[in-house]
Length: 507
Image (cartoon, rainbow, N blue to C red; front, side, top):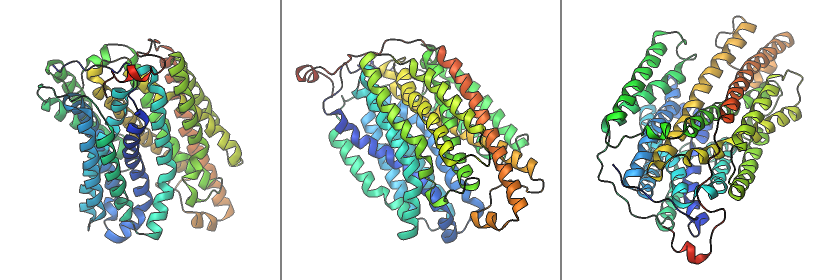
């Protein structure tokens, strides 16, 4: 068993400066997928391989999801700082190789390397915050991650369009190099954590089973309703493989001396499984809204595709503001149950209102509904992470934080798959003969006869109605789960102590 790791009693000195490098690395991984998605048409035009375009994103997502819990556990065993630096280095090397790729096959392989690094960056950020800051003060610092997510979601498409159009698609990857080096050196010099190494053996059997299970689940979610039908043998087989893998993984974790994902984090306190369910729903909402809200605004409301990142500002600004204000309130009072409860309620209400939109709904009204969803996301995502971390021991902090990131990723993958099927089914049902139900570009839409264009707009409206109504039902279930949360006092002092006490903290 790994040795017990002490939890900080107060925030380390200069903790904001130390976490700046962590947030920069996290921003790189958040921006990357958005930037690359915008650059993909140009990449395909240069490298060819249109049939494999989906794998550029899928390979990255798979590697990120599969490696996230492994990085988290390795951080618990061998030191979180060292693992974080290693993940940043892997991400930078993957970026350099991706930018130098000469074929689609090479690009996909190098994107796997990038995804492996991104998994460690995402898993390590929250665990490092936990290593430097006690739970009572953690909310205000984890609000920084909400800002990073907002900047990545909004700025990624804008940066990707600018870089691709003015410099070249390879610089969508090369830009990661100087920023990644800065983040690496910053963390190397500014992060001060006690040296820690466990003699425990690595649970390779658990890692193999968990990786296979995650890959099967993510592939099923990615391919279902698009590449293969939901009831096809390929998708059903993948889901069956994920189910069998889950059963085998749980059995292996019961016997492992130092399990990669300790079951005690799920059974020790009811708040952790509840937090996992809440963040999974938040991932569904986050990814679903980021994909289908701009589609509705561009197709039905006539917004410019060039400003696709800016279209999400009404939702992302409240995420940042509420996360910051909520974190300060939680640090001052030690109370947090109100956030997942209010967050789920706001998301359910906002998504229900979004489901009522039609072809006559103005962008101002849509922005108001989006702001309500953003308030809910801001009240839930980071606060739920703090709630989960407060329910586990410090020795399991890396595995617990990585698990939460994993559930958010899986929620996003499943949400996009289910929403994609709902949207395609609704559009196809209202426009027989359209086949895939994919959206035409602005020029093609404008060239359609008035009757055909109006029919298509109503079909898109019906599709988004199905998506947001389904998401609202999920958030209503999350509201019930949030009511079951037990408000355990947050560990740590409400305010940082003076310098003499700080000097005794582990930094």
